[in-house]
Length: 507
Image (cartoon, rainbow, N blue to C red; front, side):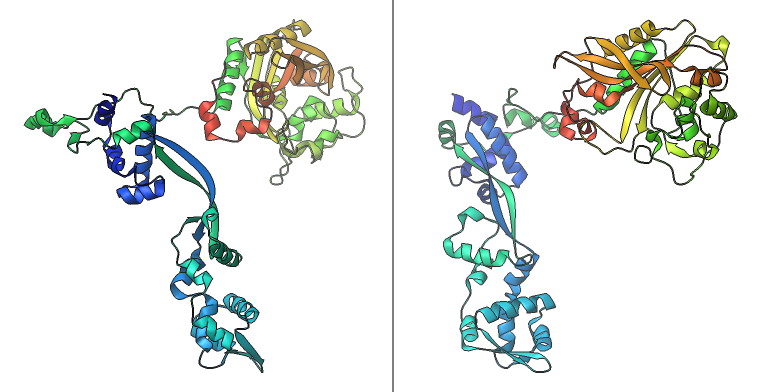
């Protein structure tokens, strides 16, 4: 009964290969025997395997194929044989042999070396080398060489299947350019199961119909047809619908968190002047981070324009201005301030946002999730292009407790168990704090960013008045990598199609 049921369920492709399953066990032979396309045979074998009719197996093997020169030499003869044919009646010069035997310069050199090693030619040197055939050469002409016999075989063939004399020919030819190619291939084989051995004995009807057509319905011929039964339990290829890259999904999720907390999103240019990116954040002009080994400077245009408040920052950098600070000392350079660069952090957006606020606008909260650039060597923890999660809260009543509260709210929604801050140092915040989160899977604290309250050297010239500004900057890649258990952050952007298809949604 099971055999009859399986026979009724057979697809036309399965019925096409079934009569030949006893004659061969290899895919290549089955394609030849059945006269079907390889893709049709493979599909039929997979379906028969699902029905337990056959057992499929595969093995990786080194397969030999003929290269372009190998195909040419099979038809025209090996260069050394054509060389001997050209001189069999008389001695010829190199230029004459090239023309007579249709050889190029490289082939001539190979021929000379090969034939001299077999004592098949004599060489005479006058103004130009000339060659004549020896008795050993004539003997070579009288019979087919092992290499010639090898080229006439049916290709491709498995390297492991070569006989001893074939191995000798293979080793001789594989050293030469583009005659023999060796590729790793998957050899697929199959064998009938006990169920399959019974099935091939059953007579399968050829008039079975796979589908009902409009014509059958119109003419009524469907009533005389025998329809194939469908197996609804059989596995089918998985269909992958289109979806956004999982990193973009995470970025949207992060934006959603801050928007729901009442923050406004900041935006700005990738290219900024050193003034906005560094000077306005009270980073000294001789700070090591400004060097080219840390920053990407723009060659053309090299310089940008400065806002009207640049002179306030000049005074603050040199002596602290009216902020109560001593500044950094030294002479502030307008030229350095004008230099264009790829922004090194999104805090530049915070500085530009503060410069547009008025006292009556407060309190306000802003965030950004944007690309920044660092001139660093890539490794498992560093990228030269990365995404920073930036946030500021401009509020006369803001304090450090609020800062920690915002960070805890954000990282809790990102899936982390707890957040803590510990003392740190950044040029533009005081007090400053490193941000650490607790990774439950590894049972340890990990550092993911920096935070603090902007210094008055930054806020007073930008706002025009003193006001607490909570600030934080977090590395997005390191933050989200833990969720997918990615240890090398380069893997976030490798665009592995399998990885993208199978990656779960964020939260």
